Each structure stands twice: as structure tokens, then as C-alpha cells.
Length: 185
Image (cartoon, rainbow, N blue to C red):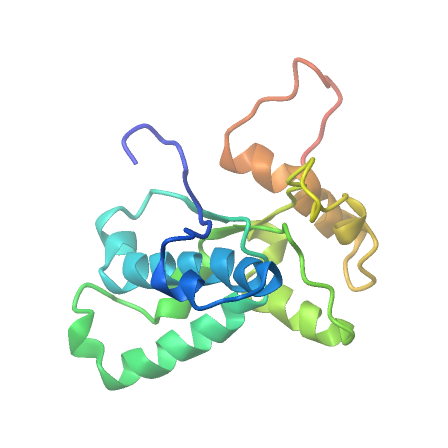
């Protein structure tokens, strides 16, 4: 926080972890591992009051996709309303802290129902908080088209998610390289 730099959590699975040890296919390990371990980390981060303790610290959740975030927001809010005494530092609902955090797109889930993805984008405030990421050269990499081809986004939103949100988060000055650059309004 003192340095003015964001903190990134890149979850991954640990083959020695009991949860991963209970899976017998890489598909299951990959689908759950990145998501579950970032879910545990974000729960601890929020419920232990770290957003209140470090209010200016920007946090990025990396390489977990997005589908798990709305589920966890709802689940944490529900439990917090019943057991708020276990999170005395919180001044608002867990989902409100989570909406202020940043998420990377990769690997972006592409559901059969586009309205589900649109609702996910709304719940996480994707216009301002989503950072496109490729994870190149891994087999599950995302091209920019995963954002660019989404029918529910306008050009300004796409531009923000495909680079401007990251430029702003990391305080990157591009005017020396692109003198005519204008950030999206």
C-alpha cells in the first residue's frame, strides 16, 4: 500500500494438497485448483478485514476465470449477515469489497447462455475492474477476442477491459509512446 502498487494473487494447485489429491483427472484438478485456492484466499482477505486495514491497496485475483466470483459474493454476503460478529472489521458486505477488487479474464468461461456472463460482468463491475489476460503460451490461453467479441459490451467498455483498466491500475504512462492517446471516458 505504501508503494502505491497493486498486490496480485496467482493461485495454482499443489499436487500434495488433500483437495487436489482427491481428484483423479487433470481436467478436475485444473477446473477446481485455480478457482478454489483463490476463493480461499479472497475469503480470508475480506473476512479478516484487510480491505479496511489497507484501504488504498489494490488487489488482483489472477488466472481463476470469473464464474466463481458471483457465487462467492452471494455466499459470503449470506453467511456474513448471519455471523457478522466473526468479521468485526467489516463496514460493508463482503461483495462490496469484492466489487472493488480486480480480476483477470483468463481462463474466461464462455457459457452457452451469454446472459450468465453478462450478469457476471455486472456483478464484478467488469467495466472498471476486469483486466484481459492471455496466459500465453499455455494451452488454455485467451485471445483478445474473448472480450472483443462479446455482444453486450460497447467499444468503450472493450477498450477499458483490453488494456486501459490495466494501464490505470499499474499507473502506466503511454503518452510518450502514443502522444495522441486519450483514455476512455
